[in-house]
Image 1: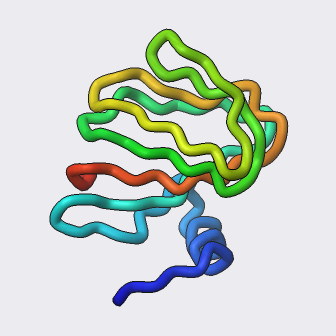
Image 2 (image 1 turned 90 degrees about the horizontal axis):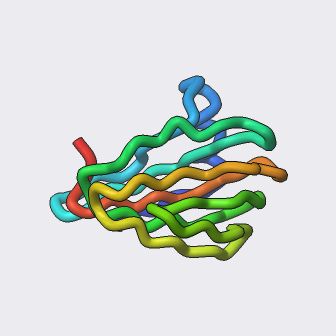
Image 3 (image 1 turned 45 degrees about the horizontal axis):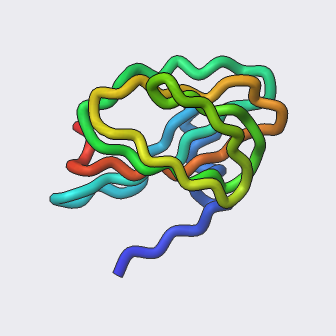
Length: 105
């Protein structure tokens, strides 16, 4: 069993001075914590994997392809491989668990 605590992941992400911390990589998937602060821009490019975004905290708009939706704590957004997706109009610091399948390299 592998068990993770969000507060510990956030502390590790901050210690590594990055917006993204991959904390799990298995044969069929990987998972990371992504952080964007209010007003920040999201530099994401299309991913080669299918992606599930689970918003842990914060509030923003998210555009996937040509569709835009508001996201907040508890939102889950699926992004197919190769489709442009990004967060924008971030009004509250955003923390997102991101699951990739197959795993990111």
